[in-house]
Length: 211
Image (tube, rainbow, N blue to C red):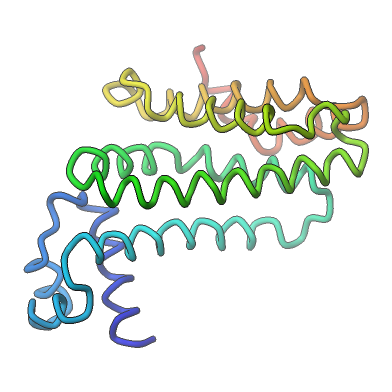
């Protein structure tokens, strides 16, 4: 790894664990035993370092999901397992979004726009493949379905009640909002796959839920 990559990785860990606002450039420099001047020479300002660090955090999540799904060949199962990972990490992602939106709105807007575009592209790819394999009806393949999925996810994550309550509530709500919606798009073959996968991937969430 280059020095810049090491800095971005360490900063990403610190921002996630300690909070974006709480971590100062001095803290990062001290943690890495480098000068603060080096940080500013490499990144210009804290906002650019935040952007690159959170981008790394997001890309690590994508890679983690690829690793989890590498043994699967059923696209609907891949979609469900990937969504489970996203749901399980929703409380962390929600906290990061809130901090960025409040303290670094320009970085938030930059990252949020990129992430929504990439998520929409991935959802379209999954949905198209599920239609092609006969798991979803053809009506599923529309921009409206993608918008509903994204709106449901972001709406739950950014709801005020999820900020002050048990973080598990975010997981419960997203599970039912997404899985139940997807089941409604399914053909009989798709329903059988979702029902088979639900206990394996979401059963522990469902059993713990009081909703």
